[in-house]
Image (cartoon, rainbow, N blue to C red):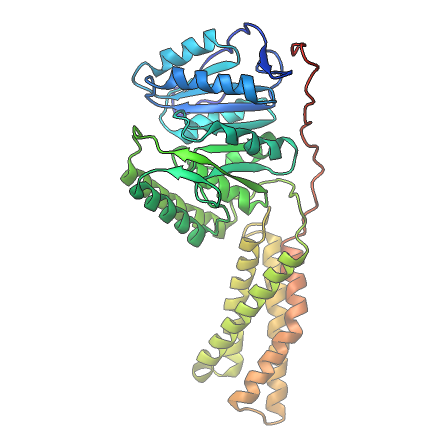
Length: 431
């Protein structure tokens, strides 16, 4: 397990099994020595008062109602009370529980350290106060174990959720998620609900691209996953606010805003793309709608720039400058909106695509303007019609140059879903 900060994590092994746990006529498999389907991490900081009782509650739920092999990891991040002593005791005495001590405070850092070291097919986490009703756990992980989705999140803001909390926290939560959608294009409803799960191969590819180790970790993980074309499943949850929550709202809001600003920069730089095979190709109606939408907007912007610059520079110079400006914006828009791995702005393929697209547009629109001048059509209307005709003629070339050359189509993944376990015969213990 990698170190977080300057202090390496300390680990206490899984408690020894003390007998089989039952699930009706089938046995639950929270046993040592078997690769877990799900590893559930409880990141904790100064939670000595509730840790033992809530780990016990989670264990009982897994033993009685959860049909997959699961382990629990208590990730203590720099607690200053007896949290670590409680966690270590639980790991020594409770089957299927492990404790890890990390020397730096931060939920994101605790999740990074434990998820990187996990051997489970799916890694998950929940807040130790168990604010989210545990009946949402199976709907959370089932789409990941079946291979349907890559990430799953609990949401307090979707239809069907039942939430008990004060108006202040409700307002802050809704406001924050609106900001995430407006600035980062988030297509998920609740970035900060402490109830998430990720497929192992996805988390291994995503974690190197997630910089934050605090509260913004959740938002950044989801945004990076979305930008890489991964499928995010949402589960409406029943959620009751913890009255003992010690989150510093002002400091957290400041860190979140700085994180949003950083993600806006990485979107432009293209530095948050991972080598993850996408579940879907980039064709189909969504891709065509995106290409058409960006093309319409860039054409309108080009025409507005041309008309604004024409009285100052003349038709030919105004055309060239407008094309260069909107051509670069067009390519960046395609690259940002298209999910999955893309090249950086300085990459040779993208520069070549920009050069070909802009060159083709410049050649055809300039030719149209010169042809109009040859026949004496130099009025504003005639020159506008000429550049529009040239732009339309260049559209197929722009599409091939930017969309196909600079942003090569991705192939569907060759992935095997984690097997859906069949319950063993009644009365038999798991190995």
